Every structure is written in structure tokens, then in C-alpha cells.
Length: 392
Image (cartoon, rainbow, N blue to C red; front, side, top):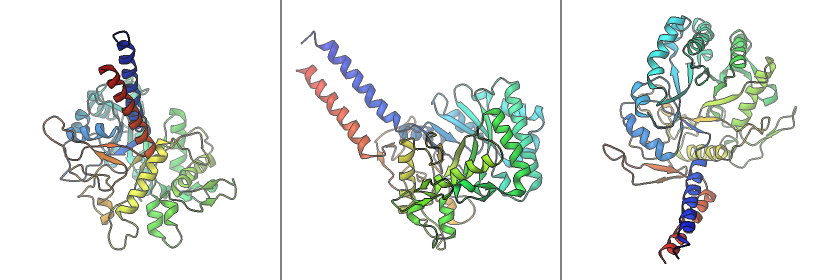
């Protein structure tokens, strides 16, 4: 028996490693938007613990909150931080751009992994043409400051757009940007092409369903079984609206002469509650949308036009935010309530886990499918069997 112990312990170690790998595989490609327009959210330290228990390793902020960035020190979480629209006008000044990075980025590197800065949010969807004119210079100013400080290889610069910048999105192959925005979008695409940074889109199929529920099939927007639609120009079949929206953006970019820019989804989600006139805003629909989407992310699916490029998505949002203005739906996109309990079940299992400084109720661990549960269960049984052999 003594001769068998080293081999058995080696096997046990291998199986434990494999079990951990299965859990880590579940988190590949999953990002979360961490908004903070609320007065009842847990502290950043507790949020860091929550996301660790979820195996989520990509987080997008809308600012550069020092408390959050400090709380995630040595957490191995990739951060997207944001520069607010109100600050764009100053960032074409190289000195001010460099100062911003020295104050909001450098103090946290390398302990906190900041990999992207978004310059403004949905700037081109508003009516402020002066703000629009500041967008590209701000992006260029921030990138130039990163180059000067030697950070341009580890932190990229981009901006997030609403789908309303498209004049047409269906069929996807005929996607095209609005003509009145071409003067802004074309040079921004050139910036992305030169600097190898992605084009970000906030895409919400919910809005399409809410706006025209008689014409938009609910199952089509929820990733549920449905007849789908076929693009008559490419003969590509789409079984969900989000993929069609992504490919419409790729088509619009191609119309402007670019084929080397990746499209990533900086926001998508579904509200669990809304006003009486907000059709479809229910916990059941939100659960279906997000759980089906997360399964596709885990499977590394691509869109019909880009099947070899896995969808890259940040889900909106981590928490319900009780101070957001607008209709009720705006305050109910969260996967979690502020006490860290799930708003609905998308495959989250609660663990009795306690972070430093106190308990965080309902700390969960992600698990998306029966197959992943079976894989972990099988490994656990094998580990128990080996343990029994060792003790025999």
C-alpha cells in the first residue's frame, strides 16, 4: 500500500486540478456591468468577494471609482473603466489627458488589472453635436497619453455606442450607419483600425420587443426555439435578434471600408420589472434572456456572419440600481438585489461563504448547465473513491 500512496496522491491532485478547471471554464468570456446609481449597494470589498465566488473575471465600470479599483487589488479581474461625457472636452489637451491617467489608472497598476478606458457613453445617440465633435479628439488624447506613459500596449481606448447609430439593421447584411453620423463614425473607425481596439455596442433586443410586440416574436429575442429569420442576401439564418444586431454592425463597418475591427457588446440585458406599459419586463423573461445568453457565451458561439469569432459580451447589470431615472425598467436590470441575493435563477447556487469583515448573504457560484454539474459531480465521486483507497 505504501508504494501506491505517491501515485494515488498524484491522481488526487490531478483530479482536483481538473475539477477547478471545469469551474474556471464556465467564466470564460463573461463580463458584467457594475453600475452604482444607487444608495443601498454593498461595499466594493463585498462586491469583490461576490464576483470572485461567481468566477466572473471581467468587470465594466462607468467611471474610475478609486474605492472599487482598490477593493479589487490582486483580484485578477480585468477592468474596463470609463471617462464621463462631461469630461470629453478636456481630453484633447495632452497635459490634462496625461494627468487623468496618472490620477485614475497608474496608482492602481499592476495590482488592479485595468485593460480598457471607454471615452464617453452613447455620445453619438444624443443631439449635442458639440459633444460629438469632442469624442474623437478625446479618444486620441487619451491614447496619446497612454503612449507617452508607456501603457498603450496594456490599456486600449474605445467608446460605447447605442444601436440607434444604425439607419438600418435588417436584414443584417444591409446594416448601415446613419448618414448624419458618418462624419463622426468614419474617423472613429479609422482610429480603431489603426490601434486595434474594438467597436463597442450597447444592444438591447428588449427595446425592439417593447416597441413592437405584435411584429417582434418574443421567443426570437429571448433565444428560445423559434422559426428564426433568413437574410435574403447571404442566406444566413438567425435564431435570435442579438446576433442579427451584431452582424448588422459588422456590415455597417464594412460599408465604410473596414474589415479588421472587432465588434463587442458593452451592454445587453433584460429588465425583471417595468411600468404597466413596459410589456415583457418580467423576471421570467429576464431569466430566459440572460440564462440563454450565458450558455451561448460559455459555448463560445459566434454569429452567423462571424462563426469563428466568439461573442464578447458584458451583461447589464450586476445590481438593481434604485436611483436611476426614467421608467421602472431602468432600475431593474440587475442580476442581484443589493443584498446579493439573485433576482431570478439563471443557474446560480448559493454557498455559505463569508468574506473578511462579515457575511455576505447569498454568495453564489455560477453553474450554467446540467452537463457542467454532471462533470463536477463525476470528478467529485472519483476524488472520494481515491480517498477511500488511500485510507483502506
